[in-house]
Image (tube, rainbow, N blue to C red; front, side):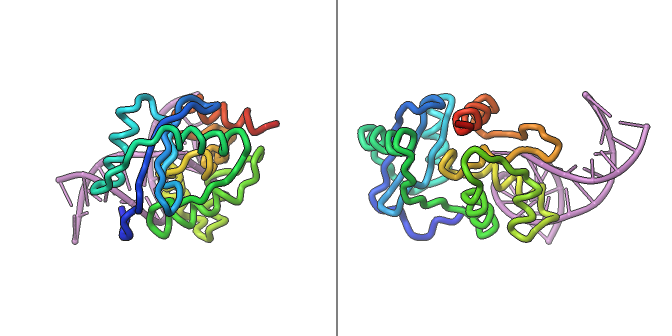
Length: 165
DNA sequence: ATAAAGGCCACCC
DNA sequence: GGGTGGCCTTTAT
């Protein structure tokens, strides 16, 4: 994965959220990861994997503050998702889905002008580094099925329920 | 370079 | 309901 400019002042931490404990990683350039891992170890392994060379300092206090802004106040902090052009275009498209609505993998493929790339769209959505804020949970299958979710289908369901009001 | 693996879809049975 | 073939990107050989 591409990560040319090194992150400045990289930090990470944990906090509760309406969907279980979350891990947020950020730098002066914005949030680069938001996950809902099974365990803290797996979250840190993920970070290590996505950002080798990067030394995140733990700062739970700041992350808890961030989480309150995101999940209670509904703020939208600056995002810094790192990925290929294809992935970026998809992640941008995801951010145009209004809360409380859903769309399908096929419609996203259509929206970015690559109607045949549905399969690849699914994989790119699965690679979304910033769950919830880049609302990949709002994408379901054309046949009405829920589709997949990196952090567990229960979590996806909860998010959709939560946004329904 | 190439293979294998995906959060899919349309189409068949 | 379940299985198949096609489609396209990424990652790991």
